[in-house]
Image (tube, rainbow over all chains, first blue to last red; front, side, top):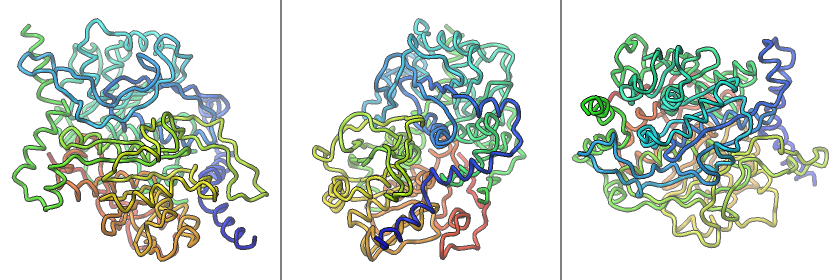
Length: 288
Length: 288
């Protein structure tokens, strides 16, 4: 029994994410929170991911990791909303690239196909406080299906009712096509810049060429894929206060904490990109 | 029609991950590959994730993003293997921390619960060339269920038949308990170091205190959570050659490319940690 206790005490003391986070929680109590942060801390935040076939896995699951870890100590619910309930493919359906007759429909059936499970449809989704929209090659398909705007219609209706709108990668194009970015600053995937910022997706949008992410009021848009993790870090810090600061240590992640850090806008030659940012200015993890 | 073509040509030229990757593929043709890389390029690599309730989402989906993107241009299959087919919860089942009677079973039912879909069970899993095991708080539960070793038994049987074994976070403890790490160097989550490296999990293992990841022959083990992305980057570079180098640009990720980079071993005061590494030595993205 002593041997077991010898083993179990380090177990009790050292990892248990629960215990780690509990100690973080204790630190947060007593910190000055904004009124918004205090209100969010005291309520159950209803998170909704709006997903579609051909999503980019990390667009969903990078930010989701932070939400998941934070849900040890903050009350939130998760709905995954899509065209139909059940498995949603990361693999894109066959589609032409740009309806260009010179390019026949691409076949992605050789690709691996991890899936996420949709818990709700656009018809039966609950009220959502936070709506998160990922990017993905599948959206090229949806964006060109002029008669299939059910996702954009859902967002046009539910977006204004939500407290926060969050997009990763070309998820901001989904917002744009739902009419949610008019009069707003936003960013998007830097390799897809020309397509994503085409005025046909929505007018009166100020696309920011060099940005890891952009916050404009209650709308947060990130650059491509991995940038979504950094934006979610900043977003949750805004929503709850510094509770997340040490959580990134526990997942051994070094966030880019400067929203203007964007070497990829330089790499992909985005017009108007800020050339002066160093390519090596990562952030250090925070001490415990 | 001209207006449409005007829109579609940038679309055709600028994002389409497919086209981006195709150009990368062209660069790779003509590069010198090792015999191993050439053989892997010419075969279908059978990837198997071994998962369990209470997995850490990013442990699975960070490395998965690289596999998914690479599957545009390299032949691979994906099996997700678990105790039963269908949805597997990221949320841990209720369990005590360390069977310590002073700590009652923790209840995680308030947490959000994203899921992955298991395509196979331990009974009907196909042959696997690469076995990937994530970490997760749920494994504290399984590690203490002395009578439930079906996952470890599966790995003990299938591990030696696989060409590569890959673990993220305390996934290396699963390998250890399956007897696969005897005589090997390995690493694991730095916050969980004391528990994870306890000799009760397996003897004759050289745990490396400061490492983003460790390669020992065909066994690759990473540090906690986000470290899995960096290890998978290095692993796939080993398996296929430099085909992945520019793919990390397309997902706007800046990998830590030095396996010895490990500020978290310092942050979490791992005995024997290398104190000399700077906390800010991130890697820059690669130019296109």
